[in-house]
Amino acid sequence: MGRQGGTVAAHEAARARSLWSLFTAGCVLAGCAVDGSGLPALDEATASPDVPVPAASPAPDAPTESPRRIVSLDYCADQYVLGLADRDRILALSPDAREAFSYLRHEAEGLPTVRQRIEDVLALHPDLVVRSYGGGPRATLFLQQAGVPVLALGFMQDIDAVRATVRRAAATFGVPERGESLVTEMDAGLERAKRRAQSVDADILYLSPAGVSAGPGTFVHELIETAGFDNFQRQPGWRSLPLERLAYETPERYAVGLFGRNRSHVDAWTPFRHPVATRRVAEGPMTPIDGATVTCGGWYLVDAVEALVESAG
Image (cartoon, rainbow, N blue to C red; front, side):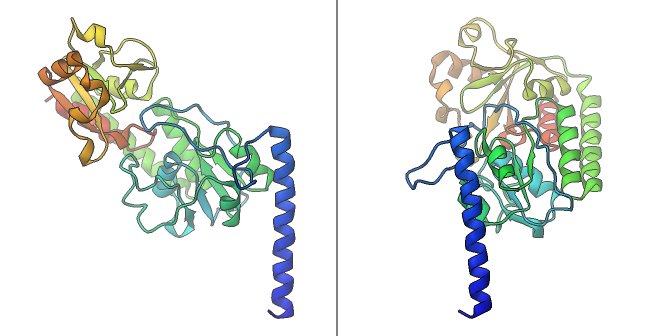
C-alpha cells in the first residue's frame, strides 16, 4: 500500500474509533443491549405485520441537501423509500423488503439489504436513515449521535397522517412534487370509491392471519368506513376474534387479509381452528384483501378500499 493509501486507511480507522467511542458512551448512558460479539446492536424489530407499532418521535435534524445514500431499516420505511426516492439513491433496504407483506416487494428486487445493527448501518456511510419501527426505540438517538440524519415515519393511524407522511418523506428526499402526485392520485381513488360506497349498507369484520380484528381507532377501521361498511368489531383497537359474539351474531361479510399464495386458505390460520369461527366464515361471503395494502399506512391503501367497495357489488 502506498503512502497515500496508508494515510486514507489511517484516517478511516481513526474515524471508526471516534464513532465507536461515541456509541460506547451513548450505550452506557442509554443502557442499550450488547450482543454476543460485544458490539451494541439496534434492538431487533419484533413488530408483527398484522399488529400496529407505536409511533416514533420525529427526527429533529434533516439533511441540508437531498440525500444520495438512503438506508431503510424496516419494511414500512421500505415502501416510502421505494415509492418516492430515486432508485440510484437507495443504498440498502430492510431484510423484509421482498417479503409478501411488503407492498412494493417487486420494486425491491435487485437492491441490497442491511441488518439492523449499528456497525452494519454505519459501515454503509448513509446520509439518511429512514425508519418506522426498525432498530428499536433507541435507533434514532444512536444514529443521530453518530451524525446520521434520521427520518422517523412513525405509525400512520389515519388517512390524514398518510398524506402528511408522504409529503414529508418526499420533501426530505428532494422530490416534493412526487409526493404531491401520490397524494393527488390517492385522493382521486378515494373519491371514486366513496361515490360507489354510497350504495353499501352492510357490516363487515376484518380478519388478519394472526387472528386479530380491527376496531374503532385503527387504520383498517377508517378504510372500512371509507368503503361504506359498518365495522362489526365494535371494541376499539386491535382485538382477538370476537368468538363469543360470533356464536350468536354474524357479520354480513368478512374482509380477509392474505399474505402470499400459501396463506390463502383458512385452515392455515390459527383462529379458524375454532369451530365457531370456521363455521361462521364458511357461511358468510368473504372479501380477500392483499395484506400488504393495510400492514403499513401508505398511499396504496386505495387498493384495499377499492377491494372492499368492489365486494359490495
